[in-house]
Image (cartoon, rainbow, N blue to C red; front, side):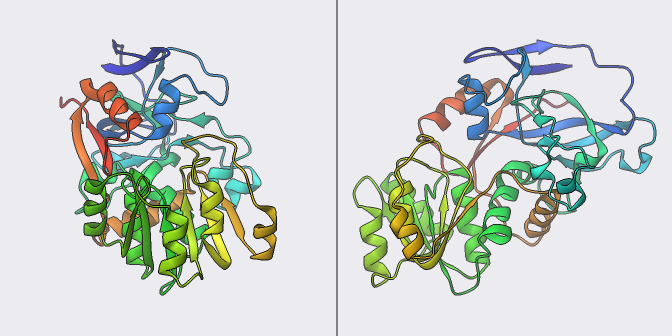
Length: 343
C-alpha cells in the first residue's frame, strides 16, 4: 500500500508501506475513496503543530472509504459498507464521551493527520466506534466532506448558536469550504444570510448559493454594510473562522443578545475585543471545535435529503500539495476533494 506522508516541514512524500496482515481487534480496515483538504492540513504542513507529534506522519484528517475487512469482535456485516471516519480519537469512557460529546473527550488521542496518522493512504485501520455510515444515495465525494467540514458547521449553527428560522446570520469567508456549507445550512434552516467574500467572482457564486447579501470585504467595510442593511440592528448570529482580521467588527455586527460562534483563526490567534460592547449588548460567544458523533450522523441525514457541500474541484492524490497551495492563497470556492487511487 501507499500513504502520503509529511516527512519534514512543507515536504510531502508518497511512501510505500507493508499492509499489516491482521486488522486490530475492534477495528475495521477501509479502502479509502476520497479525502479532503482543510486548513488543519495546511497548519500541519506548515509545521504549526499544537502538540507533540512524530514525523513521518500520514496526512489527511477527513475522508471516506469502504470497509474491506474487520478485526476480531467486530461486525462482519460492516464489510462492503461505505463509512466516513470520525477525525479524532476518543476514549468513550470520560464524562464528555458518556454524554455523547466526543469532541470534548478529556483523554483524546489526537486528531488524525495532525497528531496521529491520517486517512491519505490506500488502506486505513480505525476503531469501529469512529465510523459513521454513508446513507444510500449520498455521493462518496460529498460524504468525505462530513467529518470535519459539514459536521463542524452543523455543530456551530445547530448545537451552539441554535440558529432559528427568521433570524439573520453573517457568514465570514463565504467562499471557503465551511463558509459555503454554512450558507447552505443556514438557508435550509430558514435564516437570512449575509456573507463576506474577497472577490467579485466569489460574490457571484455566493449569491448563487442563496446568500441574501454579499459583501466584498476588499471593497466594502462589512460592519458598515451590515449595520446599514439591518437598519443599525445587526445580525442575530456571526459565523467566525477568520480570526484576527475580522474579530472586532464581527462582534460589533451583532444585534442585542446576538451570538458569535467561532471554529478557527486563519489570520491570527490574538485580536482586540470591545468588552463594553460584549456585556452591554448581551453578546454570547461560543468556541466550537469539531463535532460529536451525533453531528456527523445528522450531517449525513441532511446530505441524504439534498443539502450538499460545495465542491471546488476533485484532484488526484499526487496533487495534494498543489491543493494546499491553492488553499493557502485562498484560490478556492468550496471544498477541494482528493480522489484516492483505485485498486
